[in-house]
Image (cartoon, rainbow, N blue to C red; front, top):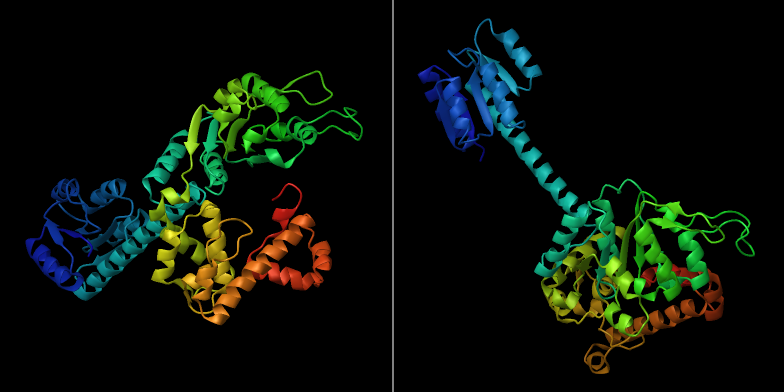
Length: 465
């Protein structure tokens, strides 16, 4: 129920309006017999609507309107006017008044205006709340959860995002390291330019060097024109070196020079070029152990590790599993026109009990597959499949034998189909046409199977798995 303040120097009008508004609107109503008294009350009791006379001794209604609007821009103010003050009331509408009534007026009409202004304010607040939720989700690029360890990570991201500090993002595969990097970039002053992401283990050493630092025409056979390189492309923006632990030692030395000198030297050139790039890196490896083995430069580690953001594994934040599962269910429900789906309580319990070696990425894939394959409106534990001990493991035999025949057959067939098709895609580097011929299937048939099972062929192209 909204708060209403009635302001008038006529005691009978105050009493009448208080009784009528309390009866019709139901919320608390207070009164003030002057503009000054109303202003003092505003300092301790901020109403949602002010109903005020214009002509009053001392501070008049227009002055109260202007000051109240400065204090609370969304405050709805309804003016009561006497003879000769209609022109003032029209001027007040231009200054932000919600409505005005000329005395004498119909009490029901004024009450209706109060109710409409309260409804408008409720809509404004609801819109603000939704925008805030959307803003929070977009601020952290999909890092959803309330667990303390995840909150520690997002709070740290919030504090360091709009700086140029070099950040090392650590965590197991599938914990959202790239999402953290995207949030760091999106919340920074560099967000106007695209973040450049480099998958360090995806390219051979010679190609990776030219991709990172560029080359001059004639630097090697096939270099028919200058290539700027990804560091130069990221000038004024952010570069993410994904899985930095796989960077060859020779390139580690060159990267260290970039971090120290803020300049690059393309292959085949003697001159260097200054770059303004914020460097983020990520890894799921133990870099300290790699340093002890002589596989990673210690000085580079300290350059990269100015601030560390650690993304927790899903098994350490089980309280966030239901929230994430419902998020993915809504997302894929919209994508595949299955908005009617809900998660059965026993399905949520089954998700929480699982170990999730693939972390949030694995949970996302499990929910996606359930959306595609669920036969009813409720996603059940059977729709989630059985957790596997490895990429090529079959569903647990004992559990299968306890299921009805058709359900057991469906799960086993699905697991075989997934393994068979992913093996074919790996073997043929994600080329759907060649994989289809090798499997004895038509291209469209294979594409339909991949789509139904949530398998993305591009992940199996060279460097993409």
